[in-house]
Length: 315
Image (cartoon, rainbow, N blue to C red; front, side):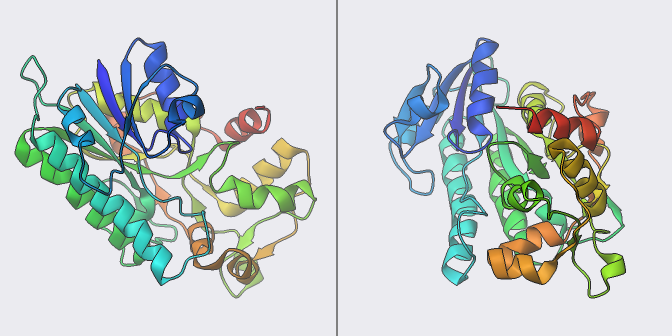
C-alpha cells in the first residue's frame, strides 16, 4: 500500500513511518523541509509542499492508496497569543481542507474501495469535563481547543461526500520521551520538585483533574487500525482505557524517574511559565477509547506505570 503522510517529521510521524515501512508499505511524505527523509530516517519519497497552501503536491495524493494527515502547529512551540492561536487553527483547518480537496480528485483505490483518510484530531474536542466519563458519542466543549477540533473534524468529514472513508483520531496526552506534554514537566521532576498540578484554588483539590493519556506505541497502533480496518469511521479516541488523575500520573512519573513526586505545582506557576497552553496540562477529561476497543484494538500499555517505566527507560 502506498501511503501519503503529512506531518511526518513531527512527534509521531517518524515512528509511524518506520512502522509503515517495516510492514512493507511505501510512504510518500509531504514536507516543507529539504532534509525530511533524513529526519525520518527511512527510505521515503519526499514531495515538497505546504499542506496549508494548495500546490502540485495535491496531484501526488491521487497516486496513493491512503492518506494519514498529521500536520499541525505544535501547541507547545511557543507561548500563546492571538497570532499563534490563529496559526494553530489555520494549520489544522486549512491544511485539512487542502488534503481533502486533493483526495476528492481521486477518492477511490484501484480496486474501487474508498480511499481512507486518517486525520488527526484531539481530545481537546471535549473541553474540560471534570470527573465525567466521555466517549466518542459525547458532545464537544466550548473552549478554544474544542472549537478548533470541531472545525478541524468538519473539514475532514467533507472527504466522505467525495467517496472516501474518513477517521478522525482524537488523541490524548501522548507519552513520548522525544517531546509533547512530558517535556515541560520532566525538569522539575528530575530536580526532585515535581508533583501534582493544581487547577483549583483549594490545594486539597490539586491533582484531581483527569489525564487521558496514551503511549506512543498505542497511538501508532490506533492510527494503523484506522488505516486498515474498513469499519473504522468517524471519531476514534486514541487514549488508554485507564485514564488517571494528575495526582496518580505524578506518582507514577516520579516512580519511573526514581524521584519524589510530592511537591504540588500551582496552576498559576505553569501559567506564568507556559502561558495559556498550560490549560492543556491543568485541565482534563476522563476519556474512554470506546470505538477502538469495539474494533478489537488491544493496548500494549493500558496502565500508566508500565507505560512511563517503558518511556523513561528509552534512549
